Structure formats: structure tokens, C-alpha cells
Image 1 (tube, one colour):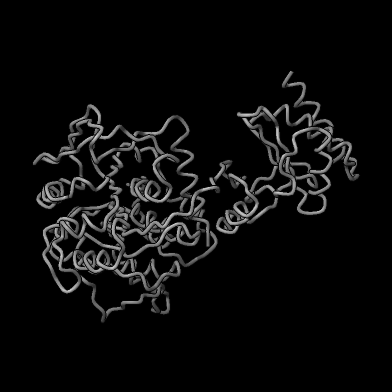
Image 2 (tube, rainbow, N blue to C red; image 1 turned 135 degrees about the vertical axis):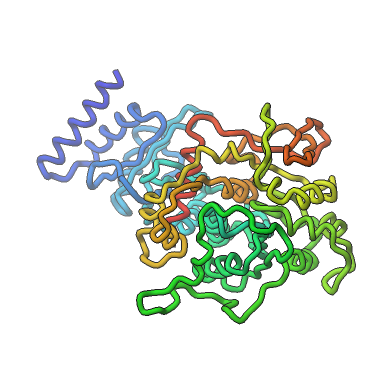
Length: 454
């Protein structure tokens, strides 16, 4: 039966197309009604081209909400004719009704505008036709204040996690208070300075670890990105700090930022080593706060989303913790037990491979982009798994949108870098489970959608 419906629909629309005559509203009504039986999960349809759009972002108009009968479909078509000639349909599993609506089309690089329009029109999602995903729009605007702590200068997933934070700020979904770089060498902080300027947030403060891990492993040597020059020897990317400026020690910037925030208001997204966090916890009173580091964190920090840990039946060493084991042990020892912490284990991000080819294609809107420069001029094509963005997405989107989390418990770290989870309903720790089939594909499409925004 379904095959017959598809054939009938295709024939009706192809006859109209070949005859080059305008399709009447009556014919469209019949065709779209039949189409709703063929696409129970929903569809988006351009009534001018008589095709499903291959690109663009689509949002339903509030004016055509609650149209679920064939008779009301006529009003939807009339509205679409007067606006952007796009009709959509979807089945509500709760009511069993198949709803029809007129859609507004946005360019795929206008996600912030599409989401704002969706919220204005009371719509739950924005549909991305190119990637065939729905992006949640009816999120609650929360006062999320984030400090991003990363080991910039090695794997490029740090750069994409930072890019996600800029895009979330474009959508007014969070405030990035500052960026802490826990991989020593000012070139790594200069890379953040470039990113701040490129994405339009030049005044976000940057802290740099100055007494951390000596010569940690570098997976992709992109630390010279900040100093890239054109063929005329001119700097390609703008920086605020410049060559003559200096960066505050990472743990000191932590203290300065936390001291100026309301109690229990700060979220830390930590995707690298925990050297600066450990030094923060060990710190004493200073010009920024009379509180010790432990008390400052206890008072100001709400939660931590941390990329790291190996859980389940495996007893493996976590790279981030093992590379800075003394600092890591101190972090686990001193972190106040009332601070909620969510771990993003490596196995959750392992399937999210963002290839160099796709990265360059997604950024084809410009010839001058710091991340694109890395992939064009460094031939290394390893370790582009999107581990770090998962902690950032979790921190902003919340705990029940993208992820399934473990029960609560306590996490301890062994001297050899193994993370041990002990389930306890009173514990402060949870960790992300790997997603079900199709989940990784969806999340990678979401990250890629952020990449095309400009």
C-alpha cells in the first residue's frame, strides 16, 4: 500500500512538472494529503518546485498551527502561497494527529535567526534540510556562566568546543566568562586570542598555565596558527593581546573570575588537563578574594562538565588525568564533594569523526578561517574525533537533551590514572553513556551545523 501511495504521489507531481503548468490548490491538497500517509515521520515540501528542499533551515509559522485535517490543509497551502511556498507535515505521537503547516525558509548559516523565529512562533524545532536533523528550539533560557578550560594546541577538538561556545553565545544561551589554557606555551593562548577575535568576542579574558605539565604529547602541531601570514607577510588573523602583551596565570584568572560571580553560578567546562584547577584548589587568599581556593570553588562553582574518565568494565588509564597525574590526584582530593560533576568518557566521542575534507567543505564560506587554515596547511589527519565538544554541549544543553547519564555515584582516581566509579544516590558524579544507534551521526551533524554559521 505504501509503495502504491508513493507511486501515485510521484505521478501526480511529475505530470504537473512536465506540463509546466501551475499546480492548482486542489491538486496540491490531494497530493500533500497522500504524502502525509507516505511520510509518517514528517516531510518538508516546496510547492513551487514540487520537490523536497535539499538545503536551508525551516520553521513553521504560528499562523498555521493546529491544522490537522484535509479541509484545514487548504488554509495552509493558501498561507504558503502568500509567503515562502513551503509546506511541512509531521505526526504528533501523543495525539496521533498529522499536522500541516506553512514554513519559513532561512539560509543554513542563519541558525540563530531561525531559532529566534521558532521561539517567537512557539515552535519546538528548526529543521535542517541538508543534514536532515531537527534542532531543538524551545529550550529554556538559563543564566549559564561558563569558564572553558582546555589544553589548546594539540588535538583540534578543543577548537571546535570553543567554536560551539561562541555560537551558543550568538544565540544568547550562555556567557563565556573566560578561557583557561592548561597547556603551557603562550602560542596556545595566542591561538585562543585568534579565535576570540575571529568569532567577535575579542575581550574574553585568557589565562595560561605556567607551571603545569612539561612537554606533553602533541597530536596535531597547530600552535603556530596564531602567527600565520599571507603571501605579503601580513598577519592573517587578528589578536587582541598581541606579541607584547602577557597572559595571567591560569589559576589566578580562575580566582579573579570566580570572585566576581554570584554564589553557585559558574559552570566549568574542562576538556584538557586539570592543572589549573588543581592549582586553584591549592591556592590561598589573594588580591581577588580572601577565600582559599577550595572555599572559593565551593561558594561560586555550580557544576563541572569534564572530558575524561574511563568507566564500565574497562580499567584503562585516562590520558588527560595520567599526563598530569600529580595535579589530577590533587584535583580529586580537594574538589568539594558538593560540586556536581559530569564526566564525558572518551568512548562517547570515539564515533564522532570529523574529517579534514568535511571541515574544509563546511567552512567554504571563507578563505580565511583559523581552523580551516590548520586543515589546509597541516597534512596530519588524525585525532579529529569530537571528544571535547561533548562536554560543552552537555554544559549548555543540559543533562536530558543529548545524553543518557549514569546513576549518581562517586569517582576516585588511582595513582596510575584509572577512574573508579562507585554508585551511590548521594554521590556528586555521573558520566555520559555512549548514545544509541544514530546518535553519534546526529551530534556530529549538529556540530557541523555550527561550523557553517558566520
